Amino acid sequence: MGLTYQSTGRSTTREIFNVPNAGSELVIALAGNPNTGKSTVFNALTGLRQHTGNWPGKTVLRAEGSFIHGGRRYTLIDLPGTYSLHANSVEEEVARDFLCFANPDATVVVADGTCLERNLNLALQVMEITDNVIVCVNLIDEARRKKMHINIQKLSKALGVPVVPTAARSGEGLSELMDTISDVALGRVMPKPVLVRYSDEMEKAIAQMEPKVREIIGTHINTRWVALRLIDGDTKLVQAMERYYKEQNPKQADLEVLA
Ligand SMILES: Nc1nc2c(ncn2[C@@H]2O[C@H](COP(=O)(O)OP(=O)(O)O)[C@@H](O)[C@H]2O)c(=O)[nH]1
Ligand SMILES: [Mg+2]
Image (tube, rainbow, N blue to C red):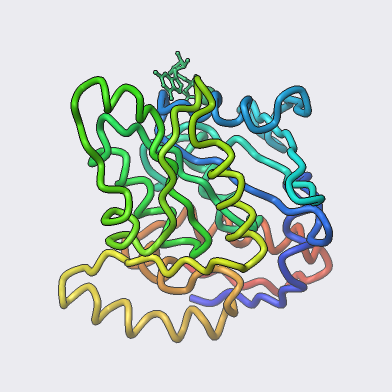
């Protein structure tokens, strides 16, 4: 197993996804289970500054928009709604690849406040890929109506990332969400995700695998997560890594295959 990777960094991989390169423009991904109000959040934040198209090489619809906050432009990418990032469907693959290879400056996971437990599964998976995560607990009005109380501070502490309650349809909490996106994207707030600890056996395997992964791919992608996926036998991730790094470095024909 081996994959040589001479990355030229975050910006070049972004080009593959047709998103702005690092610079004055910041790139924010919106992830979430279907029906959590992700598009409502997206529309509320970007207004008329948006356009749709397809993901490069896929027939999956992609919405991209932007908003200005504190004199800076933020590009928002609405990822397909998914329950996981295991690349079992083309939507999951698109979301996973974007988070993994386009390295967004921040990722907002929109969660349904009325069934948080199920929704946090995706948040935990996103947190395994990237540190810069914000959990947006949406539909907070519905949760209130159902007499559910969510302790936002406790949740934020347990996850290690900022949590913002919103009711996107009425606009509640959206300015706090923008402030938090800006804080995280600009590094004023640095989330420290509390990661899932697996069985001792699994953790041992990860600890053995991770240094090897780091040697091969460097640190542009979260090496713990790549190790985990490899242990899980995720050959699709290896194929994706090959694809993206080959596109990035077309002349580099010496990419060996990992699996
Ligand atoms: N009550 C309430 N409804 C919401 C809220 N956000 C979105 N919705 C509604 O939830 C439904 C699904 O929203 P949508 O944005 O399409 O969800 P998506 O599938 O995650 O993109 C729509 O009918 C929205 O109007 C919210 O905060 N409160
Ligand atoms: Mg949607």
